[in-house]
Structures are given as C-alpha cells and as structure tokens.
Image (cartoon, rainbow, N blue to C red):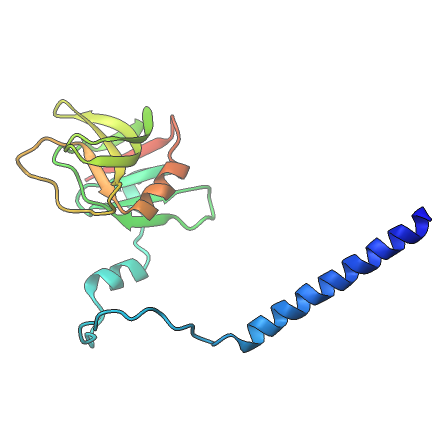
Length: 186
C-alpha cells in the first residue's frame, strides 16, 4: 500500500509541475512585449545631444596612476570621483561624489569606523558611513543621504561627508570594510 501511495504522490507532483510550467508559458506568451506604465506627466522634449553627465557615466574613467596598487578605495578631490579597485583583473567601479567642505590631505588612510545610519555633520540623516580621516578638526568619510539627494554642501559649514548616490553608497559599504585602504589624490 505504501508503495502505491508514493507512486500516486509522485504522479500528482509531476502533473502539478507540468500544469505550473504550462501556465507560466501561457502567461509569458500572452504578455505584452512592453507592459503599459501608469500615465506620467508629459516629459520635456528630448535633447538631440546626450547630457555631459550621461556621457561621463557611460565611459570608464581611468584610475589615477599615483593611487598605488592592490585593493583600495581611490578618492580624487579634484575630479570629485571615487574608484573601488578590487583584485587584479577586475574592472574598478567608479562614480562621481560631492566632496565635503573639509578635505583630507593626499595620502593613504585606513577605514577606521563605519555606521549603518546616523545624522551627518550637516544635520541630515545619512546611511552607509565609511570614515577614514580627519581634516580641519572634522571626521571625513563617505556616505549617502537617506533621502537620495546629493546637493552641494553648504560652504559656510565645516562638514566631512563625501556624498554619493544611495546605489553607490551600497557599493562603498560592501567594499570598504574596517582597515580597507583609502588613497586620497589631489
């Protein structure tokens, strides 16, 4: 009896899997190639020339030659850009940042502190804070604003937050753990 029950269960399982597979196929075969989206407000007329920002993000930016070797975060104050340089042979991830008003001196540092979520020196809620230096009496580190904005810092305030988008902040958080090398170049 046990033998025939297991045969029935196996048969029912095969039939259920076949039905699910058929329904999945049927759904994909009848789905539109481009699903309709909710009505959005009319967009501005497209520009015939791509924006400079889109062009900058599309082409890779070379890691500064004077930034050392090995796995490291490279921060160029002048280019307002960060590179996450992994092991040899891996393509570095690079993205623009908004520098703080307090700039660390060129050199090599180590990540010495991290916080998942805090209030920044500018009073704004931030996340994925990766601290590595002190400049002008202010702690300096990479972070993302929780609201996703990346405005220019107030030049009248001493701040140490080098800001990036939330997606780039996620990448920084995953890459730059305690004692990771951070190289600051002009």
